[in-house]
Image (cartoon, rainbow, N blue to C red):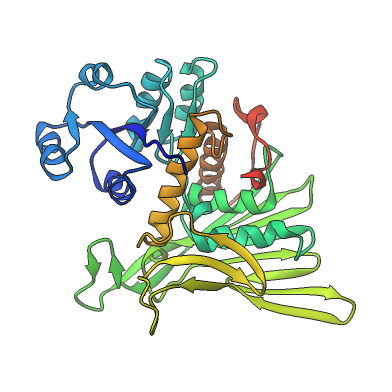
Length: 369
């Protein structure tokens, strides 16, 4: 971590923005939100009073008052592209919330409006959640041999696709998508607002898609039901299959040698349990003697998602000071595009095929994150 906090502006002040503010509050030596641009004066007043962040409803006042290291765009996806263009074309580095645009036409239009050399990264956090980061480390460690397929039932659309492409190391290769939906009746349990008061059964929609990369013999299976985000009775799952082994959620099975099959488990080193008085936080995740993940925010008391969002900010801090791209606009656009193809395939019942996009030449294998 740097020793000088980045000076960050933010567009938006709603629920998602609050996650960034909490990270900055916990780690003021690294992140400093100095100004916010919001839609209403009441939102500006709430940020001024509640967060101590200078806020305005005027974009001119927002841009003229500070020299930002970068600006986080945390707005509804219908207007995110406009803010990306407005800021990036002024030479300001942008960290945009997902997705960068609402449909394929908007994604194409976004690229056509950006100046050459625009510095844009996208805040896709799922790869940086500790448990998923540890699973990615297993996939890339060689324990499983060459990875050939993956099953991702973790998050919707572009979030799940980001994990899938990262594990398979897929860039802009031609892809075929087949998908279907079915009604999944399930009791409402837990949401952003807390526990449901009763046991009402809702008809939710589960989407299942097969995403194949014919030229490389790779297969990704995507499956998700919106209830999975919070529900204890519709849990999240991720599996990786390679020539020498498999990862099933938190269990790793692989062949160490002839006649020598090994099973390891991803273990969280969590403090504050039983007689441990050092506070409650995640130190690391290991499998046997292998340390797969170390928490850069320990001993901060953060949830896994907060750690992931903080990691995105750390990587953005590094990016604006000459560090590498960690999730550029091309990768974010490709993941959103494949999400659109899943929806198209599910509606039509037919296989659909990806086509080269304006961003295709900028894609690599996401496994290099």
